[in-house]
Length: 354
Image (cartoon, rainbow, N blue to C red; front, side, top):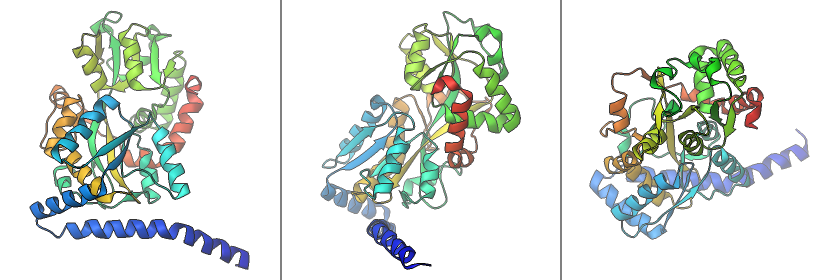
């Protein structure tokens, strides 16, 4: 190795060293709390969190859904503060990547339904933290190392306008979306990558790609954001959304919108993950917020936003609605670690999504 190469390696190590030391120190501090009795541990964590001042939370969820969580946290722990920064879609991944490259993370906690964050977690952007609440989350909704936990799950469904589509016209299986009846009548999120990856798993890669190419021939209109897309269907701009979140459909229908969801089984879950940033500026506040979010109290707040909590002790109207139905969870590790390639292929097939 040349002297120049040696210097480059040393410079790289020195650049990363402060961040690595910071992450290691925070992990050790949090690990020390695990040895305390539960009540004493929680009280100590609360006191330390108050001394830090705040927790900065990056979240790619609606502000209307995030606010009850931050408000609930601050009410439960007076003297603490939770500040949320909202991102749309995969923009949260771009921000986390750029901050990691700069070695200047600004977030303490990340809440993301974009499974591409799993690939970032492999790159050491997450802090290991084993919240005691994790025992109430089943395998598949948490990793073994304590790096992330699924705090809620969305149900991916096709939604239709009930004034423009009769109930018996609604698709019964995914291939019904290819019927000529839906030509020029469909809308779809421009970043529907998780659904795309899920369908490739379900149909098989080769058959799945054939299906997607034929679906594109339906002249689909692409929108950025599932909530907006669902609102457009409710307004009659489109007959149906290819894929959206069940919670949005139920929320708008409850408000009187002419919306329902197609009985296309199996229904697939798309989990949203929470993790602490590796170099969280406020690790104690972050840990306290994660505990609250995963707790029974925090998960009941999740229910009030018409989402399915992941804590096994808390039920929601969605879970009751789907009881007895064929509901599955895709291989989120496969989707997460191939997220970039999945997104690229999606854009190649659905050219209108660019």
